[in-house]
Image (cartoon, rainbow over all chains, first blue to last red; front, side):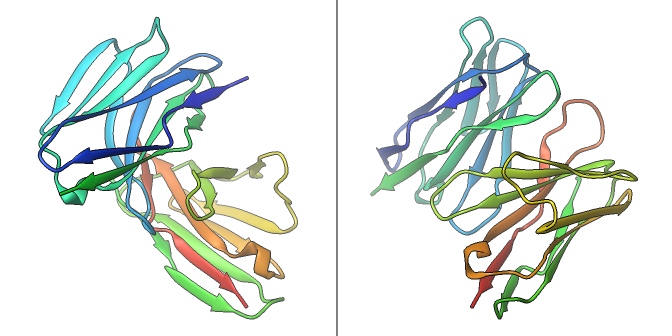
Length: 109
Length: 116
């Protein structure tokens, strides 16, 4: 079956760095997305990886290893506004998105 | 950039009412749109894939007669929750893939449906 695993909840300190991991098992693979979702709001797009390696975009970076079925989202210089859920989603061979349950990130002062 | 507009953003109505939610792609054409449902503190659950000019594809366990989907044009899909009951209260979100290959999903702002 198809499956996405990511931690349920993480806590980090303002100004620090946090890494949110995601492992996936899908029927075929056409890329991996990370989305941020604040409570009561729709998700917003953060990153897309289809090739192995690290993609950096400001304070956020996303890494992919296709051979390991693994990705992570790295958030640097954490701010209080980064408190949100982070959703990992893989695109399978039919271009259907398979969603993880999301990681709730709590930022403490 | 690509924008998806969803309307209404909030609905409160009595049990037995039918509610229509609209999802529009504002500056691009979307032959496919997706409808999700999200309960508090849970991830997105795909309900159905809306296909322009043809029938929607429903996920297992989603009642077709309960959740009517119409994708009448390349920029509009509608979800109608028929004879809504309190258990249908949820956050409904639509999305459309951006133009081009392997583009991210662009989400509407969501519709919070509360059935009394």
